[in-house]
Length: 440
Image (cartoon, rainbow, N blue to C red):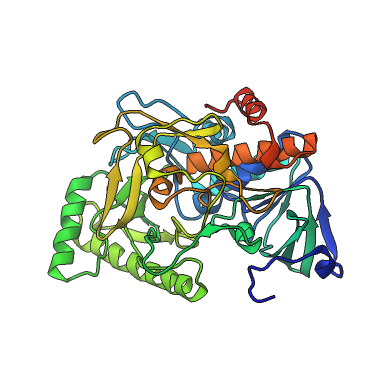
């Protein structure tokens, strides 16, 4: 084997202990993966979610605290995502651990929640679905036989072990399974546009609302121009949380990083924390409402917006997004604008159908979840098959959860019907999704 991405055969893993065998395995327990797990198990498939960290929820439970993508931008604020995704948001809202708020840039109403409670919400939903959970277990190899993914090798606290299933879902964010299976991917490379990374943080004892977003941006630019503070990003967002006097801050920007390079990612983590310290110092020194504030927490890990993306049976394009295109095999809807942070000190926003939020939406095709080269595998979440520009819209967490529900439902249905996910009748899949509350 020449690289770590090379897959193995069953003969090459014959000596490994079989840790689990069932119908569907989901790799990655973030927004897409957790939704996929619940959907698959609710369809009756014996399902296991495999996660490298110690909790479910992924970026949504460790870096961010607001779901975007539930509502299309525009005056009417039409909700375009339902199903399991809305079940999660609605539960948090009803329990008092979330609230809805407008977005400064017109991206549509967001659902701001407490990340720790999101973790527990996913714990309960996955447990109630009957699915199994394997935490602290990164995938290190993919097993392929007769052009189909049939197993995974994971590294556990007891050493390497084998997992077997009839269908697999790659919801890892970085397309870990697809990459190791050798399928075609759009990968980070010199000269290729890639969204920067962000380390978020929270501050307490803030006089919330004392400074407008417009004024905050002016103060950041002024301080950056002076050279008094090293502030690479001149805009961003600070918003209130469920906790009194505590704000969540999305201001840092670490650019030019390949998140799949281990040393670059490690350096980005360090740089993110340096920027947090600098922005916190600036806020306390210069911004009204922060005189008594202090840094209370930082993200568990730096937030990655984009890394590897599938080159699947259909590649969602900028033209598809901007023209509000629908598809016969659509399994989710999206109205989020193109939100490209690869714009230097600012962020580029482009709205579907025009220069202002219009409420228009497009469909996310099922084919964008399917690799070309292998069977038995779907992807879901931010590693779907989409161009850089289209990805800047469709990567919102509500859409990731919707893709996850579609992938989980499709995987379970394919096992039930004894067909590959790529051969599944899409009309039947769409009917099942609509029956389960998905908005198409």
